[in-house]
Amino acid sequence: MYAYNFKRQWWNPFDKGQVVPVSYDWSQVRAERWSQTGALPNGGVIFKWGVMLSIVAPGTNNVIDRFHLSTMGADQHAWAYICTYMQEGPSALPPPGPPKDHNDVLWCEFALRLAPRVEWPAEMDLESRTAP
Image (cartoon, rainbow, N blue to C red; front, side):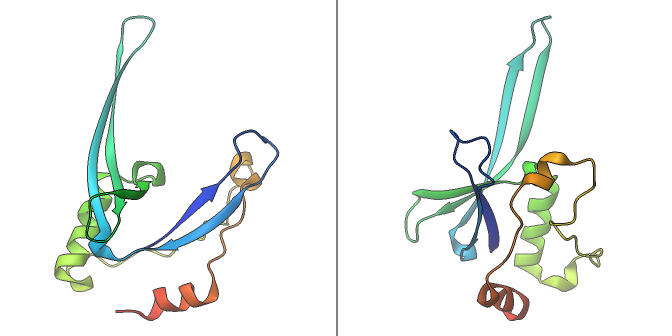
């Protein structure tokens, strides 16, 4: 599994941070369903839920990294897609849409324009495109 983390310094609001690409084996990936409830000042209630991918150290259940699928605009559906791919292969999935360039942002998305650009290391990019 290939992903990237944004590393920022909380005390420096002008720091663009850095993008750190990571690679993990699928045997280290666990899915966790989470839910959260909150109260509004007017007495209303807010419910949130989603799926988080946890990366565990090999041979243990010690979590070393986490990725929220809900922050990527996906949740249970993305996890179902991942599970189907891992269990039945790419032929069981619908054809993919055109790939999205995460560095291509709209003019009105100011925060994303200020974020650091995603650049995969050459060897990781080649491995992700050619590995079975």
